[in-house]
Length: 406
Image 1 (cartoon, rainbow, N blue to C red):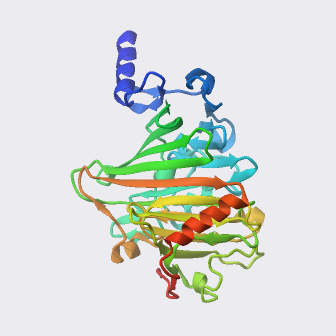
Image 2 (cartoon, rainbow, N blue to C red; image 1 turned 180 degrees about the vertical axis):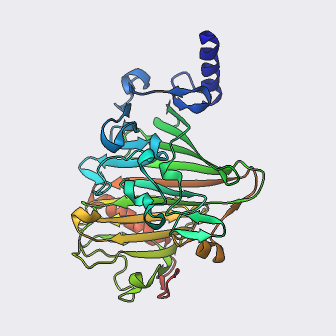
Image 3 (cartoon, one colour; image 1 turned 90 degrees about the vertical axis):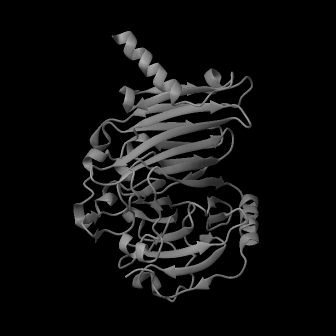
């Protein structure tokens, strides 16, 4: 019987893994269908890489102690950037580092909290913030945005996906056309008598390049139409954030999300003035960006000195909207800004539906997303990115002072 189960596990792994060239490798780490769970594992270029390949490592670890007990993380070093994927938390990325440049922020939540300790309905539907601390945290899949009663559904802040463990996780090394590592995660946001939405995420990185790329899809596995929403809540603190930092993008139109964000008539809405002591109200600005003929656009957060930055490359066919969250509170309170491309704005789903910004997937249909996040570690790279963004800007942004939400 054990041999039969082993054969079934091997067959399932083969079926779920793309065909590989002779100098490529792959491994399934988690698979609920075959009851497979790997606790700890490590591989390096010396074992998997082609001859002469630059050094890289992958390590799967299981965390212990406190509210992080049982959380699994995948630590990746591609030779130019390190980053951590969290299969237990919606296949998010918790942090990244490129040389001396840290991508991420100092959340008051220090541990990577296990989903079992989170109650999304707490605090009027804002329990999501109890574990909030990652670099790239998705909102969705059926909804994101403010808590709201939507018909017979009580929607909580930013949906469920960030607190759902991946049901399948695999990693592969590809040698061509360029050497890269690809991490695949499947997260199921299913309910009986409700949505049956599946996130299939591929997070890839080219060896020796300080960049991570998301090629994701959301599939409606039911046989009836289903609304879906998807947000990439990407968060940055120091050293990129500080007085004099700037958000740069080819903005077509920008509007505040609420009255607090409208204060000051949006003067300097894309610039940062540093941490503020209480009383302070966070601001959110919703916008659309110009793109090229293929629908690709770019957005950058430039450091106060202009010698570092982060560049996001976005396919607007899947992520047609962008919002910037400025939370310039004190350092210990969670000093951070969020650059957040999405299928809509982070208003309540009822507001977004009325505005026509909630996609509907037919039964069996999929919605595809492409997003890349690259670290910029020199003034020359920042200047090059700014020039590329400027080339996309057709005209100055239209400033709308009326809030997009209540």
